[in-house]
Length: 292
Image 1: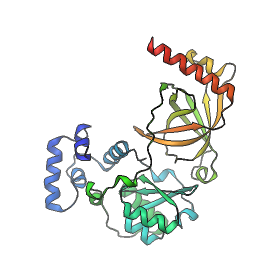
Image 2: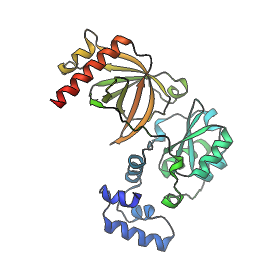
Image 3: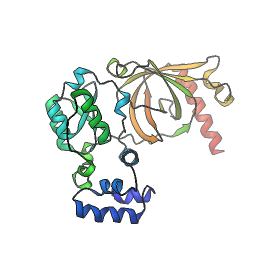
Image 4: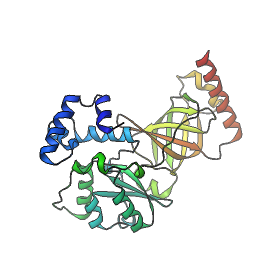
């Protein structure tokens, strides 16, 4: 399915607006994405959220991260401005790269060769990238725009592997606290503990989907505490006498956005046998209730 068809199907713009943008695109030589914005049919932010949810690429607000000098120094300013990209983090041989066109394999391949790191594209708005480059390197009159983000120059080869989520899952909505234990990622944030909310849990009790307001890359190790909610008696068997379940986990997937929140999949690591058994019994009971 083409992105043009999908944006109409999702109701972000109507068919007439898209056709008008395509006509203007032929006149200007810019992509119809740019023309949709210029014509007032959508905004840069709305388009970015659409791309993020459609392509399952995290939309990152660069203002939320503190980019360290050693990460910034991996790529020259000239290359960053050439491709309009911004390094965000480095973790276990992976470079998180903010990009306006996350399907630009030429940029990804060149930066991967330059750094000897695998590149994971992160979606950012061009205005956000330009703002960060000017922040770290000083202002420069650099012309770049969304016209370069066309389906003709977008390759799915650039996309990170996707979690197919074939396992059965049960809804589980509880408060969650996240402590990032990967030092290279925790250094990006000013707070040590993050408040989030769980969404669902896998049938085997080994994977949890949660949502919160910042992106965490795959392979980030965390300490995940599921908090007891006194108003939800149906979750009591999970906790028994405890007020929370604190478990080691790592981020394994990005599952799109819900408004401003990121939906992230975490896989538990070295979960105690008794706790895993307790979670599995809880999930199986929930499935039986839903089927009954």
